[in-house]
Image (cartoon, rainbow, N blue to C red):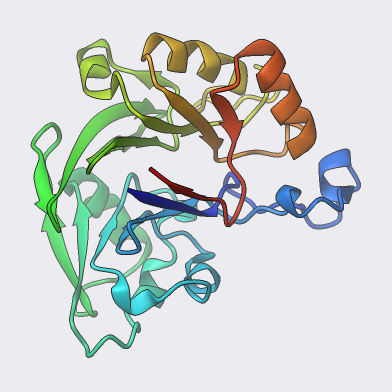
Length: 252
């Protein structure tokens, strides 16, 4: 399994415009973050935020066979429009999405009649994309319908980008992931949004889920520099906890 973190920021990229905080003044390229998006096996795209066009310039977009949408917030869907003009012989790109999320997406952008094939998926019913097993499972993310996505190839990769609670009934779906990508919007409860967990919460959750390797994504403005966060994790969580950064590639 190959995983490329195309973007790792929360709803707004880092550095923030006009900000002079430690993160935004950092010269470390790992502190420059675009909206969260991940590419699996060069062909399965997780979410399609506003930075999609720029992300896909760094890969071969004609290899993309499927887009999996986790929820309908703008930082995860606004790039769908860009994907309608990927010149791959005009072969439609499959979008996998639940009906509640599709209903929300249609309030913001029109994707009807574009070069996208909409596939409605049902939570907790697995399906295959190129012999890779996919399963959506519901999570709590404020009042919007949101889902984590479990991907099983030779390894199990679980993506839970925006959430503040995993339902007890879904914990069995998430347990024992080889790689867990999890919400890291804030470091602590200070500044924590109502639909998100903090990194400190995420440490406890990931340990309870018995994930082997954990990568925090959706990194927000109230966290810390990459160097600080990595040190924090090693001291407070363990050496299997990491902060993902834009362009990070993993092969398992």
